[in-house]
Length: 206
Length: 96
Image (cartoon, rainbow over all chains, first blue to last red; front, side, top):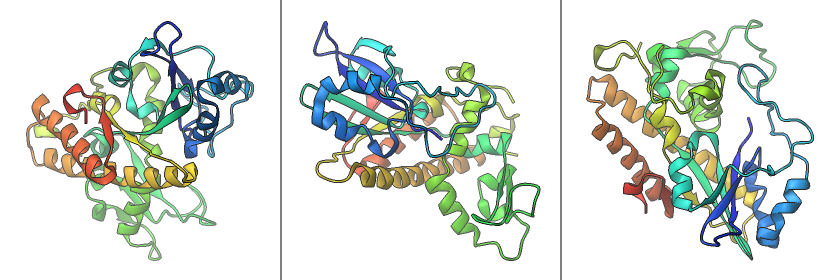
């Protein structure tokens, strides 16, 4: 899963406004922070020449998912927005698509973690998803062995209702802890699989 | 299957996709990667628990009116503020 970032640099026409660029995986580990901290806004051009670095786990190439080319720059050359305030940017931004915002100034950068929210995650998973939990190493993949647990329907709202398939399964509380801490990308990828075209719909029928 | 207020599921993803909170990472002299890992896990856990709480609330047949959904967002902003301190929301009514 990639961790997209927004890079806001002062607009040439009005220094109180910003031009905003997308970075395909620039949020991961706040990797652009040291660069902009050292170079300020003059660091943008350099990153636009530098090749994209792939995420730790490459996005699945199906559906509407965009597969970056190897010559894609670290920060894209064409801005997403021109001459916007940060408030305007935040109002327009779909937070689930980005993980970091770099507000770059002449001599430094302010770095923000973008924490998306909503009230539909577990119910959307309940309506559309089935999650199978396998051992981290050596336990195989779907189809090769029984999963520790299968989570579907209402079980997403109460994981104690998940179906246990193996006696050696870890406590479901541990599974929930891991799921909540490091696997939110499941939900994000699900949104991507539904397609970018649905990204701005207010509702979606099942 | 979760059926809000007994009706067939017609999931709204708008709120989930639109809203969020910017947290000032205040990296300073700390390794940015360490700050990232810390924020990533804490923010994910906070989000999961927040949404679980509200999903259960709605599963009990409680209203999903715009006012209630807005309260859910405000609740998230407040929880994030308590957890992380310096936050900035994208809802003009909730800007820190």
